Length: 179
Image 1 (tube, helix red, strand yellow):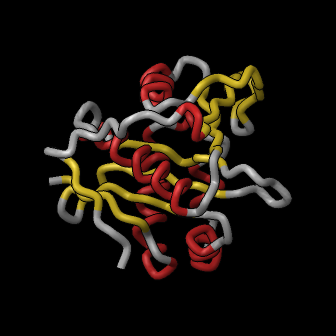
Image 2: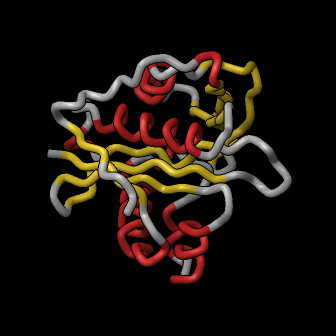
């Protein structure tokens, strides 16, 4: 059974492993690059897991990474961003992405927020379908992808008003509460 849980700074090695796997698997989807993030030292990985207004959720199949999503709130911003969304190819179509989005939205509610945004690259229709299934809607804002300016991204937003029922396949995925 897949379990979803939130990482602590002491789990920086697991986050590094998953993030680098995501960048290697789907470089077209991220504003960063594998080469750039391979150079990060332990302190950068720990900071990403401990920054105020941030959260990282991972999906594990036993001890094997099945996917991840992170949230961070940019400096000076009130609205957090969902970033680093990825599901391992062997786990796509099994509810892992749905479970991770559900956990991100639970974090939004737990922290008293009523909005979160993300960017999805043009052509990444599976990601777009995943997020719109959970109530994210296009804002009309478009930006170039930092890692490849030839790729455009569209900003999507979820608000408490667009919230619906969780879309997780509970029989396949279990959320592990943070202890």
